[in-house]
Amino acid sequence: MSTASALSRATGRTPSRDGLRRGVVAVGAVVAVAGSAVGSGAFGGTPIAEAAGGALSADATLVAPAGPAFAIWSVVYAGLVALAVWQLLPAHARDERQRATGWWVAASLLLNLVWIATVQAGWVGASVAVIAALLAVLVVAFGRLVATRPRSRVESVVVDGTVGLYLGWVSIATVANAAAALEQAGLTTAEPVWAVVVLAVAAGAGVLTAVRSRGSVAFGAALTWGLAWVCAGRLSGTDSSTAAAVAAGAAAAVVAGTTAAVRLRARRR
Image (cartoon, rainbow, N blue to C red; front, top):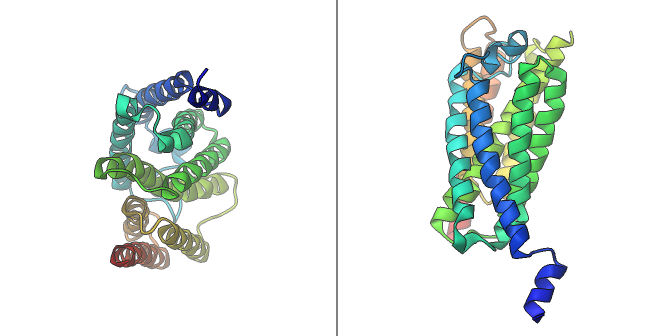
């Protein structure tokens, strides 16, 4: 056995393991897209916004994004399919960045499917635990990508961009999901002060991530998108709130501004 082969086996990075990982990611992407179609009500089922008694509807809490915000899922799923195809290409079979993140991406796809199932079952409290786990998994995957540079513009968009977009949206979705669970449990989240504090925390997390990711456009855009639609949702409707709208709008501006500033600074170096 050659030295290279011995090292590959010792580290668990054999061609068979690479093939398994790539296959799982590919299958996971297909299943996730199918699950999202079911969750959206495309096959006659109950849309997520109407499941669990409307706990996750656009006007359920003061930090729920308005309905159009959820269109971002189409972009995220398209990116995940593109990522799955990209990592299947022979040239990327032993890619170190994929080895570092592939299983985490696969885990995120599984958790996404489990989240849809728990919400459809009406288990809002359980869905918080699932989406929190999803958020944690994406933080790890995104952090590992940020630690190294993509080798091409295509990789930057398909891999880093997809995971960044996914993380940015799930970040605001986690906030909305947790608020919905608290509301369902009888712990009111209707106070504007509560919403302002939560949105300020979301903005702080966005700023921190922007700095650590050297201004990830995908993450910043997704989080800004979610916050902007929280603002839009609070400007009208049955759950309007000027304080929450202003806080969400300010948070969106801070995240977008910080992302742009950090990225510009990084380019100048």
